[in-house]
Amino acid sequence: MAKIFCVANQKGGVGKTTTTVNLAAGLAQIGQRVLVIDLDPQGNATMGSGIDKRKLELTVYDVLLESASIAEAKARGEKAGYDVLGANRELAGAEVELVELERREKRLKTAIAEAAKDYDFVLIDCPPSLSMLTLNGLCSAHGVVVPMQCEYFALEGLTDLVNTIKQVHANLNPDLQIIGLLRVMFDPRITLQSQVSEQLKGHFGDKVFDTVIPRNVRLAEAPSYGLPGVVFDPASKGAQAFVDFAREMVERIKTM
Image 1 (cartoon, helix red, strand yellow):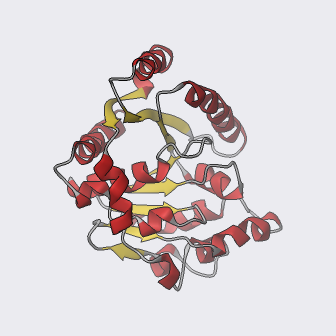
Image 2: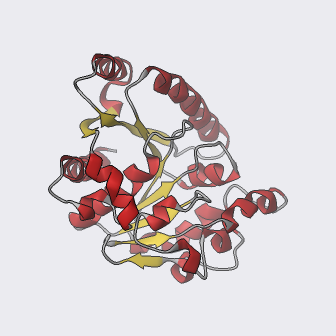
């Protein structure tokens, strides 16, 4: 049965989508069957997987409103190597429509349950705000992967996220836990980053992944070509780090 993970952080611009698509591509490269669910109306994970969000006939919006199943709505990111349940601007309207519906925070969970047998991993790219969309992701997931930059304000954002996860765990999804913190955009030459990295390890211990994703130009360039960095430039340091992270993820699952 698939392991379902949200990639979430309430702070914007920390590399959630970059983490989602590159982890997915890394997992696909080591033989895992992966589905990426794009829960962000901007549709960046969809475009970054090589799928044109403007041409999608069915999206995660249709799945949340239960007018289509994941099997009907998914698209294949051929070069990326995994399936995508895409998003576009329509999804912004789902926020308003879901408020009045029954089981509004559990709709994605129900849809994933039907498709889970076809995958080893389901990765959900959440929007930065705590919205009804993010709540659907958190209610569906076994755990949360938190990408974070090693800088001062990142620690404040992390406190908010941990509190949110505790609330969802207590009230809506008793399976939910933090799987791990992934240090991204890391530059060892910056003293503060190394200090924050040590603080994280001191406070969260083995919840901090061993793999560190370096600041890398090729990872930043890849989305403009509609590809994850792992596929765009496999030899780059960033791509190699994400493949290492995928392997670490598979190992961590075995101990859960």
